[in-house]
Image 1 (spheres, rainbow, N blue to C red):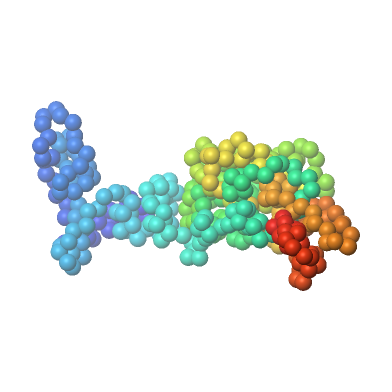
Image 2 (cartoon, helix red, strand yellow):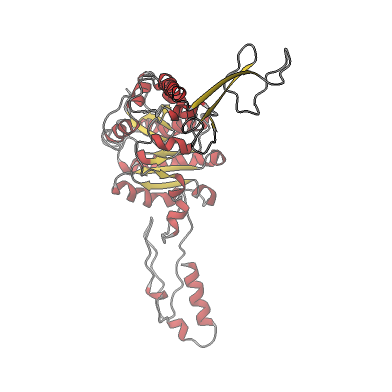
Length: 378
C-alpha cells in the first residue's frame, strides 16, 4: 500500500470517528480575479480550488479534543505521521523519499532503525581528540590550521548509527549490497535503499552516486566504488581511490550537505593496504578542505578495526598538525635528552620534569623559571 493510500485511509477513519473536520468555504476577502491569499485566520491553506475555496483541517482527541482544543494539520509530513507509516514495509521508494524530505530532524527519529544513534555534536573533532595526546612530528606535511582541525574527526564505531547529513558506502559496481560495510548499510536502511539503487544502473570505479538514507539516521547515502588492489597498489589505483573521496565530496557540495562520514574504502575484501590507503585519504581530505572549509562542518573518518584506528592516530598529525612538542630543556649536570624518534610519539612525563626537580634547589628565581619554561613547553 502506498503512503498516499495509507494517509487517505487514516484520514477517513478520523473523519468517521468525528476526530477530523474538513470544511470548504469561499476564501474570505478574495476579490474576483485577485491573487489567492496564502493563509487564513481559521487555519493554514491545504488546497485551493478554481472558485477560491480553501480546505482547512482540525484534528483532536474525540470529537473536539479532550481539552476542547484543535490542532491544525499544517503540512503533508504530519498527515503522513498520523498514518503511522512503516518504511520497512512501504513499497514505493519515491513516495518514501518524498515523505522523509518533509520531516524535521526530530520527526525523522521515529523512523530510524536504531534508538542508540549518535549525534554529530557527540563526535569529537580532531582538535579535541588530539588535545590529550603529547605528540611530536618533526616534519609535518602541512602547516598547522586550527580551523581545519575542527573540521575533521576520527571515530571508531558503527557508521550506520551516525546522525549526519550523509554517510559514504564502500559499494561494489552493482550498488545492490554486498559484504562488509556495504551489506551493513543496506540492511540498516531497509529494502527501499536497494529499490532506489536499482534505478542507478551501476557505478564505475572512482565515481559516486547518491540516494536517500531511508531508515538510517543519516539523511543520504553516497555510494562509491573503490579500486581492487592485489599487492602493492599502482599509481592508477591510488588515483581511483582518491577519486572515490573527491567524487563523494562533490556530491556533498552539490546537495548542500555539511557533514559526511567515510568508511575505509577498498581496504577490506578489495585488498588495498591499510597504511597506503590512509596516506591517500588524508592527503585528499586535507587538500579538499583547504579549498572548501567554509562549505562543510565536519568530515569524519569512521573506522571499525582497532588496526585502522591506530594507523590514523599515527598519520593524522602529519596532515593535520596540532602543535609541536619541542625538546625539553636539559637539567643542569645531565645530558641533553636524545631526539624523539621520527613520527608520532606518546610522551610520558620525563624524569626531568618530575618532583623533586634539581633546578628548584637553586637559590633565587632562576631555577624555578627554568622549570616552568620546560613544563609549559612540554
